Amino acid sequence: MGYVAVRGGGVAIEESLKLLEYERVAKGDTSTVEEIEITFPGLIEQVMGEASLYAPRLAALALKQAQGSPEEAVFLLRAFRSTLERPYISRVIDTEKMQVERRISAAFKDVPGGQLLGATRDYSHRLINFNLEEETAEDQARIREEFEAHVEEIGGNATEEALASLGSLPKVMDYLRSEGLSETYENDDTEPVDVTMEPLTFPAPRSARLQTLARGMTQGVTTLGYAAIRGFGPSHPTVGELRAGTVEVLIDNPLSEDHNENDSYYVGSIPVTEVESVFSVDSTKNGKAHLSFEVGYGLVMGHLETKAIAMSVLDFCLNQGDKQYPTQDEEFVLYHVDGVEATGFVSHLKLPHYVTFQSKLSSVRSTVGEELRAHENSEHDEVLSENCENQSVEEGEE
Figure 1: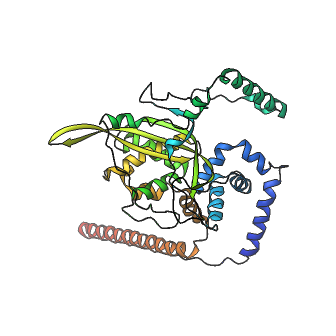
Figure 2: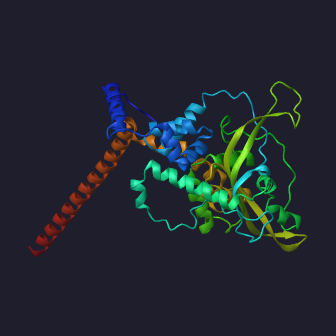
């Protein structure tokens, strides 16, 4: 692709950046990084998840610099992440030990450990609350105090055992597996591919597919998952279990070469959402038609439930290995859910393409010129033919 230098472009770019910085503060005092982090937790988690970096304060800073653009904030945070060292690799996170804040199942009404509705907008009216326009710090403090008093009133009798059980709730899908209704698989300890360090290759291992979906653009993953359900994919899922909460991140003792299971360092906890969706699948077993359940898996950073569900749908689709639907084509899905890749490529169309366009322009002009000349020649031939006919008629009359 050819580019040519634009005379005076350097000066124009500098002035453009000054204008951009001015527009960031032109309408008055902007929110502090701390205020952004507190006010927009969902947006912060989306940016961190797509950037593959758990850093709430840096995500808020990136959003401030990007003037609220999630795509630009993700770009900034990924660029910063690429400069960081990676001194340790965490142990595999065990989601069965998740400190659950929300746990639901669309497949079963009664599940071991019970369903936990938690905080959700699923049953809200989705109406704008105009009272928030005049909300003060005192109003927010009052809401916090009233809720804390409410929790103390209704939850004061909760035992430590009951609270501890939220960190060891059994998986709903284990119930189906125990009855032989779903396939069971042995643990695969193959070293996972790190898509942040190695480019995608096809066919991609499942570890690369899951990573790419987890760090994919939230709206992109959701859209393709929706397309798969609507008919551009194999079937309609049922959410076997959705759980949201926090998981511990542990590393091996860096001072010991013996990786003892009980000798680890606690780094911190991160919020995640995990989904296991159930699909009914027709197959053949021992020469007979066989109906069973298969599972699609989704795990994303933060409380992004819609993305996690869509990820589980696409995981199931890509496991089918049949390209009859676009959502089963891993190259199509994995290359088009990454927000940084998509934004970067589409945005580059704004850059100068003078040389390539001039080539196209010359080709079009040449084609149009040939068509005009052909049209003129055709008209000339018609005139000559008409003159000849007129001359023949005149000679016949004489």
